Image (cartoon, rainbow, N blue to C red; front, side):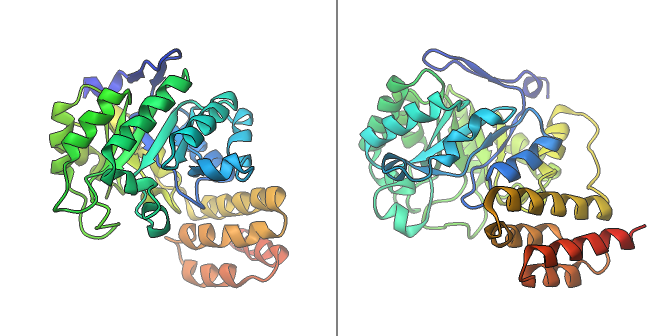
Length: 331
């Protein structure tokens, strides 16, 4: 475990970074907005957190700028994950993200969503290894901060060559690789193949982060033991449990693991998240908050009744009153 306490050094082409935590929060579209990231920070001040995925073409057209412009106002390491299949927009987006304060740039080569993959972005780049390496090379050349890649085992089982693809990315200048243990064909079905991640880790010189089916501290420790990975990335496991990242960080470091929040603290957390989203998004914040409330409102008596009422609340005040009344009931 001593190796896991020493941090992960990423030299970059001009600015080096040292990850003090071996657990990373995955970029999640529609989830890892600024409000959610601030919740993660309560329990995991040192962990690398990502913005929601940024489409480089959309950014070029002036859309999604808020995802990178808000970085300067946040504490702790925050990476920007970029998505596209064209080197030029990726370069321009990477430069903008660096100027906005990105801790590092991650290139998405794993998103399985059909409308993205079939246009050549995300996991579509698994079928275009030459283009994938050109994108990495171009982005590495354009920025001073480290450039990393998140990818999968392959497009499908028949054509899967995760080691060959990973070696090409390493040679192109990627300074860290996050590997999800499924193919694009699998999506999120089946079981993450940690053994395949371990086989890649053995042959690479750059750090490898394992991703897929890590939903608890014990999962994280087993995954690291099996794969030899330098760390883990948590995706869907943190939805509704933003404290999980901090718990896993403590487990990896051999520190005492904090308990899950008490029911009253969970309600306060839900209310804090709702108020933050309302402040940033107006009444539309309630629509965004609904999915978070449905994920987080669990694990205590009558949680299901409260959850059902919250997701059906028609106005922000109705939702706020439900939560405040529940808080009073704990007194």
